[in-house]
Length: 112
Figure 1 (tube, rainbow, N blue to C red):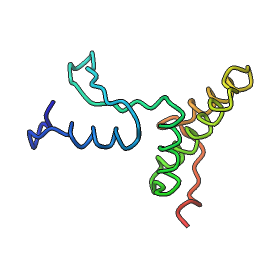
Figure 2 (figure 1 turned 60 degrees about the vertical axis):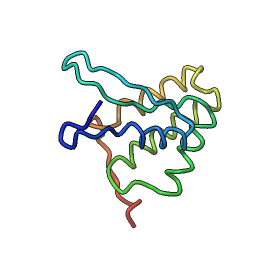
Figure 3 (figure 1 turned 180 degrees about the horizontal axis):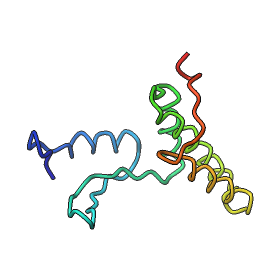
């Protein structure tokens, strides 16, 4: 898989990132376009902890920071086995349904 402009592969650098985060690097193919792309998948407590520690030390300065905070809340529910409860499932769905383009609440105090 090559960058369409530079004709270079990002696989080596993505593999380094994947190793650092203790994640899996996979390739996916988008059915509608046939385009292939890389994904990083984190599922172990170790990799989730590394990712959280990284973004706590080096926070995002974009709107994605708010999505990160919601993602972190969901991860904490999962790590505490609360995702098995009705309340936990409801909370995770609420968080998911308010991320990315669905976000309706914005605050910027993390930029201070």
